[in-house]
Length: 381
Image (cartoon, rainbow, N blue to C red):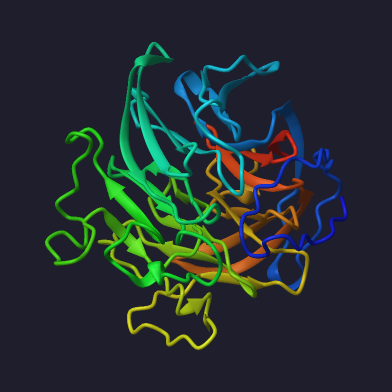
């Protein structure tokens, strides 16, 4: 297993740094997790090399699409990544934590969405129509924008939920310590998970059952709040439950959870709370929803990278477990969960490098994206 040293730059953010050129760690024998239970036996099989891969999503025809941070999107095939099917590199910048940060298809693969920061740093979500598995450039339209006061904590992940609506994650606006208090404010989209209907209006409609519809002074797009930098989130394809990896400030990394039956409105606490702990002189909100899992910075970890609940067929002993990692540590881990409670944690014994994201194929198999370039599939040992 590769040994990594902890980075010190912009501790507690996702730190989308330029590639250090580190190779993906080859998988050896998995390490048992002691009292937390026996780890599933897996290896990482490198299937492609990209230039700073930042996000991935299942595409039409069983394909997997990969975003590269500088602005290109490529499709993963049997011989690696193909030529770019989209190139917006002239419209974004990789300064700070900016770039092409998220991609998603709707459930019918009829539309493709990108989340990026433009040359002024404004978070932007654009839509393309898809025909016969190909993007239609002349159909491009902007769905939503959000001004970012700083170059970090952009969030930028997006995906469709089981309800058919588009969810978008934005960080608190950046700097450090949430200087504008955006996490707890309902009059801004910053520090939030949003829920919109891009097919229902121009440029989008707000689902009528969103939790803050009709509330004076609140943005009706908000689904959940109190988030610092929800860099990666996902829905369990088996249950519909929501899991969010929210990057901490200086001491605690957290994973948040909401049941598929949730009506939204969860307050995950930032910036009054960092994980289960008051941040600075914060007071825990009465409606605080604590994380289902947290870990401190006493080890090599510095920035949680949320993943997926594994629903593939290749690794039987991993089924139903939430797979995640950390950008600085790179160790791929799994949580056993029952009804929103963590019942065990395991170290899968593989290291993905600078793990910036995971991707889930249409078959439920998972891919690990190393910002240094490697794209690896989690396979049975």
